[in-house]
View: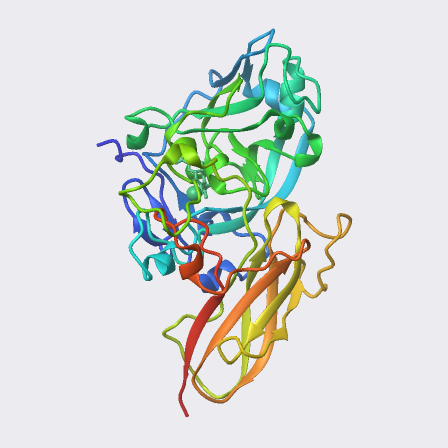
Amino acid sequence: SDYAREPPRHPCLRINAKEPFNAEPPRSALISSFVTPVDLFFKRNHGPIPLIEDIERYSVSICGLIDNPRELFMSDIRMLPKYTVTATLQCAGNRRTAMSQVKTVKGVGWDVSALGNAVWGGAKLADVLELVGIPKLTITTESGGKHVEFVSVDKCKEENGGPYKASIPLSQATNPVAEVLLAYEMNGELLNRDHGYPLRVVVPGIIGARSVKWLDSINVIANECQGFFMQRDYKMFPPSVDWDNINWSTRRPQMDFPVQCAICSLEDVNAIKPGKVKISGYAVAGGGRGIERVDISLDGGKRWLEASLYQKAGIPYVSDDLNSDKWAWVLFEAVVDISSSTTIVAKAADLAANVQPEKVEEIWNLRGILNTSWHRVQVRVGH
Ligand code: MTE
Ligand code: MO
């Protein structure tokens, strides 16, 4: 079968779909380190994992609305300055299972671990594009190119057996500060097959769907990519839209990620002893905005206390460009006294003071994306 050559995976991953392979780590494992180990990093696929064996012959073609189309081999890409960017990749479907409990949604179910934080190593897309004659900070090429499309080598049924693809604006792609990477390393190791070997795109700050794995070509195009995952998926609809009245063309492809957080030290089923309890989890803001605050409630959201934040263990998190990783999540922690069964709630605010919506009902959408509602965990206290 097409799935006969899948790579080996860590036994502790929770499999949400087998073929294509979609899996996430247990909550508790997710927050045991700031940088997520590769084997515990969630895997989100729409087809079989490609097997690219002849690395000498592997190349990325850069074409479209440019004067000098080119084939770039791995050696050309490795010749460019290497950057490492610590960035959290989060699937738009993270926390979908909880959204479907309100009303059924379409899509793979995910708990709170469809994200991970990695140190990506590779060339800046802005440098790659400069190599083919597109200057930094370009909004439009002379021949009218405004978007940069990434096409994979994988085969997805949503694309009728064609490759996965996505695009981002040319202005973002050519902006060195946006730090869009063509990554060949993850956490200091060669990128593995599950995560896009030999080369993937990493677009910090936006939904994971635009970070195309197993890159085959880059096209400079006039209008955004017309692929399935841009036009008929990963769009945010209001709760009033369902499958009988959907009009895909009324919405733009989702890019930016809204502020998100989740408690990872506890699950709904946990029974705990009365006394001191450590509540910990992650918070992450879209667009590199950084986290301002994580609020915790021990009574379902009536009264709140502030959690402490950190990226490097033991060092309080200060959100500024010099001392923090702006594209990365922030871990939070609060030690509290709990004496009886209750609902613990967490919500985050980003630097722009964006907050998470209270109820999942308010943001329910038929595809079950962007569930960023307050995260609740019910604990039973036994004496
Ligand atoms: N790229 C290709 N070629 N095929 C895919 O199915 N899935 C996307 C994106 N890039 C996908 C892809 C989605 S929806 C997400 S969330 C991320 O990859 C997941 O990346 P990961 O598997 O490395 O965690
Ligand atoms: Mo995703």
